[in-house]
Length: 391
Image 1 (cartoon, rainbow, N blue to C red):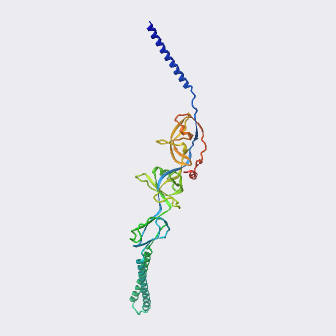
Image 2 (image 1 turned 120 degrees about the vertical axis):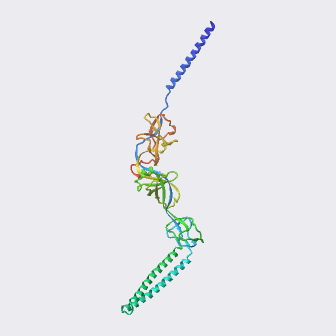
Image 3 (image 1 turned 180 degrees about the vertical axis):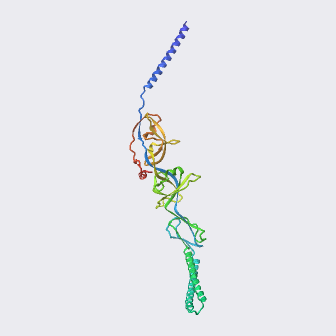
């Protein structure tokens, strides 16, 4: 009997422990439900609306001289002198090389002597024709004799013209012994040194490149070219430095291809820039930005745009006043803003600060973002206004 009562007491004690534990758990749960929620995170915001902005495209281009000329000897001979500093600018008409003149001076002297001889023959033939003319009029000689004298005079006249042409040719060849620059520009290395025998119209001596203005060749994908097609003459073309800032403004397109490259699917274009200080050199790779036409887009502060592994995103406030991410499509910069071409709708509230504290679904409280230094007024409908803030 004692054993029975002991077992019964043990069971009652165990039930009491279980009930006590349940009451504690319920008390803890009730305390959690009644615990105060953290306040919404205060964030700066910007309500976005669509606006008209210029269509801006970027490409990598390669600079080349607006004129490039190969300098070759036009007469054969020994190269006697080089009269320019390699790599230095030269003026149009400046003498670059001198070829041995002796043989060409002799050829000119011989041609002039031959011309003098032909002129003497002409004078003799003219006097003979005049003498026989009076005799033929008096029928003292046959008409045939006079005709022969007249033909001799005409032949002598033609011989003088031929001799004059040979003199001009000899004088021209003599002038070619001074190899001059046909254009102004920057010289390259001299290919042939003094003392070399050069062949006419064959041996390259040096190259001259005109670098002001400079030309930049680049290509655009077919889809991008379609976006600016029709605006080529009005397009503004800029050169950008490594940081994306504009280093040259107001270039102009002076060529747009009329066909699409079948292999690459691109259209070739060429822009022209002033280059008085020779900042850009032929062969240099540069970043090109083209502003042409307009499109409707949103302007979002750069600080509000984040990059993940797949795309760019922004944080927006949903209808429940909670933070959520939104993938976007971006174009170029205007001032301190990204041009957003996709992913946003009119009236969306974009979070612009406190981004590091944001988590999807946390409650947020909007406040007006502080004015940012350097903010530019969004362009209304003119390329000039957009260009003033483009970086």
